[in-house]
Image (tube, rainbow, N blue to C red):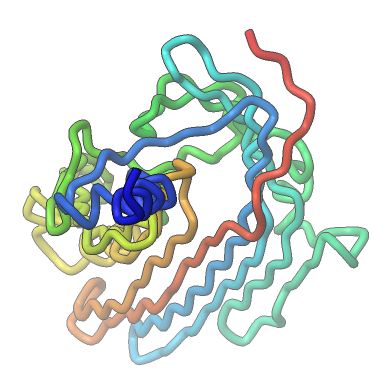
Length: 288
């Protein structure tokens, strides 16, 4: 074997397949890959500020939530579908409405939660849902759901990945429906699509942007004021080699005028961040 050939072979073995794919063809297959017994731990932070003006009166409200969540992988079946328990380990949260005193609670230091946070406290440390997904991140089954399915523009627990390999710049869309009340009090279904774009592939990490696009005409400011909080716009980072989400950031910066009279206004500013905080740990689990 010549020295040059040996160097080429060595380089081939050193670089993961995803990196070579990105360098040579700019195309890659994105898939989840979880193993029984793995525990993935994420830190999640949600900050939201809303300022509402009605009848010449301004009311400001704010919400802050910092939490640690885990996925406890319990099974991977013969079809490659992965089952995990979604658990919230700890939470530090506060909220303030208008001139009222701020209400806050930290589960790691405070014993008794305020009444407004009691439901959250009751769910800490135990599975709030058991979810089975396929390799594309699509839900196949959800058991014992205690409120994790609601999607207020914060994205689901998983990223819906494209069916086929995607190139840098490639896009895929996922349909979704949200609800809003009309001025007559009727509930209207609004169709939207979540448009995903693979922006970059680097060192085995895919950078993906997501943007919500309403397909149904929203109609008026009253409905828009309900819809804006349910839309997603941000950036995701996905580990192609390990098959899991590394981080997520979603942002909102919206102003709606005239949602309840000509002088009414609502400003909504928010950010949601989520990041994998450590390498997955392993606990004992049984494979079915």
